[in-house]
Image 1: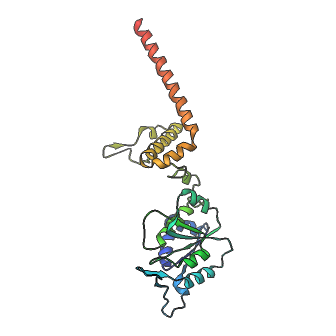
Image 2 (image 1 turned 90 degrees about the vertical axis):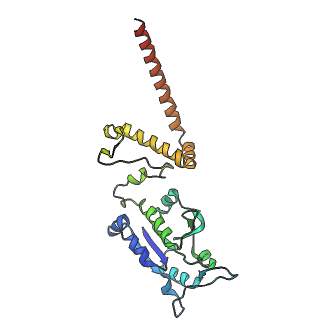
Length: 260
């Protein structure tokens, strides 16, 4: 996956990207980063990239020329997706990350100040993406967040290709609680089921915990998951019916023995 980032702060992008999982993946050749300084393409003697907003208003706006010339310098194939992180965009989620991970390359356009002149956005941007209902000072952090989420979907980046499938939001469920050593810490013990060695029961416990947590914290996600997994509720109903029959049978046997 190639990442191209148009920004006023390329060192900010490079420093974060070079760390941890994305940094190791880049060393392996699974990811690459090209951070381009938009200011280098300004024709202003002082490398100015912003100006006052037509119609009035607070703040400065990045004007189109340096942004457009920086984009043209990439010489990426026609049809390359260009993402502009902004509040007025589609909310980013795991489904979008999975979709973007199918691309060979992505371009990110990072705004600053009051944003970017709409004309250049209309000219080059294919995807306007929001990371949530709040405002940050620039597009760099949102771009890094999206790049990180997409990178984890690239085969080989995590080292274990099934690990991202077990994480939060992959199947519209939040992740189950996880525990490590020691077995007891300050009076709190690891759930016994996780120490049982019964992998089937462990998986059942994890699923139930994911469902419980999602239902409590994100009922919107739970409803979405529930609507797409009717087989879970059918299997659960059958299991509960068997347990009731088993309990009733046991109660009858105990009653019979008590009369003897």
